[in-house]
Length: 65
Image (tube, rainbow, N blue to C red; front, side, top):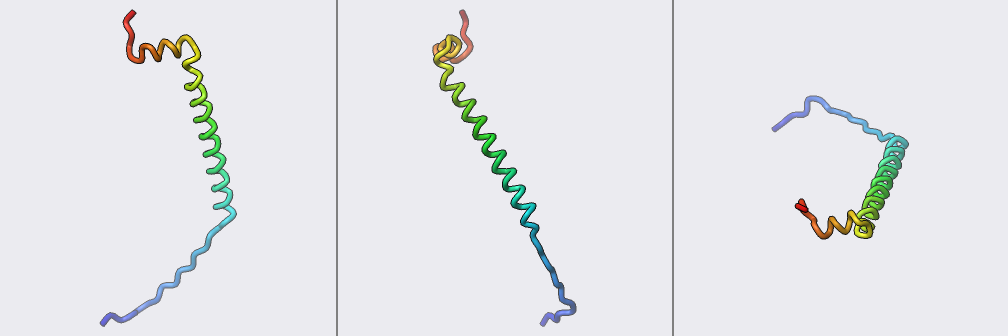
């Protein structure tokens, strides 16, 4: 049978202020990314209303004119 020779005591702590600050920063970055994606999507939605966008829809690949 095994015999315990020594004991190990471990104490852990968490600095919640740093955690909260980092979570706020992450949430802000996610909101900025979502905003950028929305703006990019709006540009694609309106692309068909321009001459270049209409040409791209008619000839999606390389066109030879």
